[in-house]
Length: 345
Ligand SMILES: NC(=O)N[C@@H](CC(=O)O)C(=O)O
Ligand SMILES: [Zn+2]
Ligand SMILES: [Zn+2]
Image (cartoon, rainbow, N blue to C red):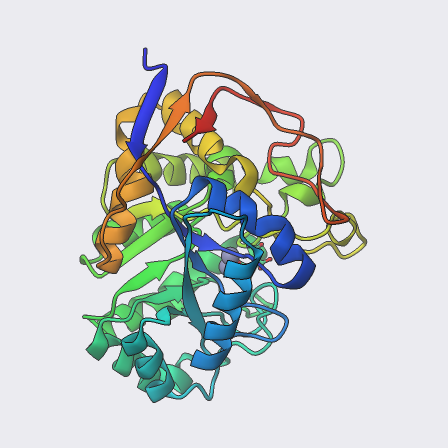
């Protein structure tokens, strides 16, 4: 039995660091466990320009603890009117690592997102030409489509045609939640990959309605039925280079979650590696955690692997019921549970 697991320093390929007081409250958690993170651009005022990304990166760096060793990798928020040359300039300068497609209305702060994929064909052509990855929140927004089917229908209606039209475009289907997504990514060519969250490996949709309504288990894409959780979890631990770590840590203040119209998002940054380690351990796949957490992502993005290591020890960690930072109350994923692993440098 493995009790001490030392792996190359990992990265988080999907995080929401927010802004202002919330940024200061949450950034240290991600910086504690990860060397780099792909930072989502869905701020209240979305990050749509190189200047906005540069300024946001500065605010993130200013929010980090003294002596940190963390690099935020910035993304641009695609809109119907995004300028392809802005993306190219930001990518060439090393400010914009990737660009993010939010179908308008699909999730938190997506109102300025894309209303019709044809509106960004010019941007996608540009990105394909320069090797800039496209990151996708893959859900249709058609209100006729059942919320539990929105990812599968997006794959069929939008993603399949997109991959055919832009065969060289690097695409990351973010936070996959269905067997359909796993199957699509596995059967696609090497330009298509996916991130997997800890929560979609751990909970199915029953968790949202466990003896009452559970706002802290609500996120988008919403957790699906058990067979989908098992497929996503199997993909994460499979060893396939197409799947890598992206927590989708998405903090909202406790009061905004526990509300008549609660916000979507699960805050898992504080114990993300402990959560993933428990999953890989239960699947007898601890030997594959390093590839998932530290190798597959940078290889797909074409970035160097990190130097240095982190260590996970088989020592239990009690996840607190609540965390308070700078007056903000946050409920972490798996609050009140005990995880079998502890992260350390
Ligand atoms: N995942 C979520 O439920 N919420 C994210 C947005 C997103 O990643 O879709 C957020 O920004 O709150
Ligand atoms: Zn999303
Ligand atoms: Zn997200």
